[in-house]
Amino acid sequence: MVTRCVCADVSLAELIELARREGLGYEGLSARTGCGGGCGLCEPYVRLALRTGKPELPVLSAAEIAEIMRAR
View 1 (cartoon, rainbow, N blue to C red):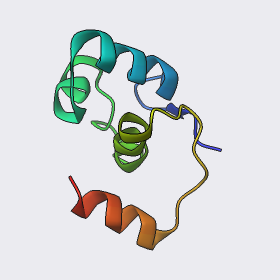
View 2 (cartoon, rainbow, N blue to C red; view 1 turned 45 degrees about the vertical axis):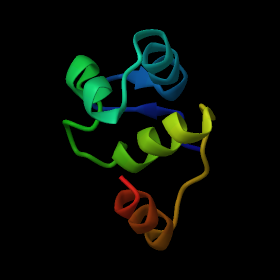
View 3 (cartoon, one colour; view 1 turned 90 degrees about the vertical axis):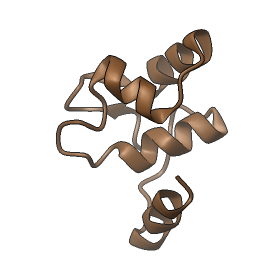
View 4 (cartoon, rainbow, N blue to C red; view 1 turned 30 degrees about the vertical axis):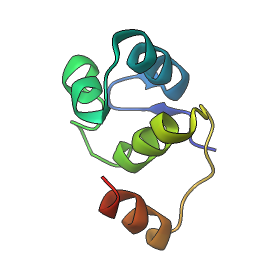
């Protein structure tokens, strides 16, 4: 399961809460916390967590990641 952005050391639960509290989308959340700005591997997971509200996500396939990134 994926539960956090390792580079920014912040959990998906914390990111979801912050986004809701401050009305942030992915870009604003990334600018505020640094998530997605390191290795970038968490970006599709953060986007999916924001979309679904789920703080724990399964490891996604390449096709699932591509679909999430197309839907930005």
